[in-house]
View 1 (tube, rainbow, N blue to C red):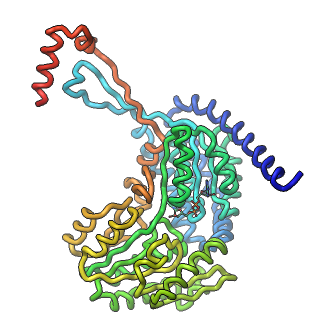
View 2 (view 1 turned 90 degrees about the horizontal axis):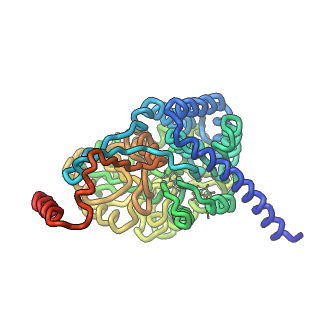
View 3 (view 1 turned 90 degrees about the vertical axis):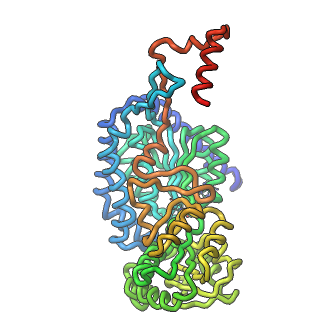
Length: 478
Ligand code: NAD
């Protein structure tokens, strides 16, 4: 047997296991259509208990995969999952309640209701950058909505993926929730199955592959993608506050955050003052040498280290000034918190999603410049404005488009359970979190009942009476 045959037979074997699990999940999904809020809440509680019981193992896995400090693991991995579960537990009964749709003039004599039904068998494909949060967060929404779920976590954070697979194995039956670990080949095999819904978090490039696969079955999709999230700091901003907030959002998780400030537009008059505050904010968080800080993460793997270093090298080769940082160390996958000025708009650092601890800073003299730049590029996932000038804030919000907006705050809108989280076009389709996550995994089913047998009034033959009725109705509306 040559290598090709052995790889392909390995894939066939796992594909058949996937198909078997999928078929079992399809059977259970039909039963789960009638699951009660209490039954779903019990499952959410089981997931919560399993996560909390595995806290130490989660810290170890995140440290191994991302050099993530335990406090940051609490903040941006465990807490969002527990928050999502608690929020769903608290509101599930109201989310599941059958909603009344008001009768309209033309529908007099009928009654209408909206039933939230589970979509069925759902696929969750998750990325590596917040591996626990971005896998178990959507899972909580999928459970709340009453689905069965197959999960494919990222191969780039293998300790976290193995741990999540173990947690799920010990907590749920495979017919209900199963994890398939592996790389793009495993994703590809899963994407061939006719899932009722596909929930993907990752890059726009792979998002397109997922959407094309979904199209083959007309599976519905939620695509949580990425891109370049801009920041605008105007002359009125509280610079100390802005610098702390932007530096925190940028260097959290080593810049490997979908809603991290990617690049910054600042009014030319305040650049020098802002740079001083930004340098001070970085030094306060990570000391003079971030490599020795226990609170500073690392780039996830060698490939991404080289990718970010190439972006940095390309920027400096094109004349960018390193204001702070710029130090890289391949053996430690370390890139210092880096601030760049004098960057060229056509260099890679201003063209590609950076996804690393490098912040290019561009100056403007008129607020229309960053707005024009943002509108000339794909719609971002997040857009941040630091300003006290309400006219500028309104102008930026009204004249641009993005998944979400932070005003004098970065990243934290992700964790607001009452806000929809998602992108627009290149940064995503659909939204998640809280009730929006519940809706992503539910089908809103329209149910109409004729109460008084009034609809036959409009059936043929179109007698003068029917014509008069239609004429009166049209007159009423015109
Ligand atoms: P990625 O798209 O490379 O991978 C995501 C998942 O897709 C992984 O599980 C991977 O195994 C799988 N995959 C990779 N190639 C595939 C293929 N050809 N076919 C099918 N599946 C495939 O993304 P990533 O590198 O893990 O994550 C970084 C990206 O995700 C960034 O663009 C970031 O902005 C985005 N992101 C978005 C959000 C959000 O909530 N919107 C959150 C985190 C990350």
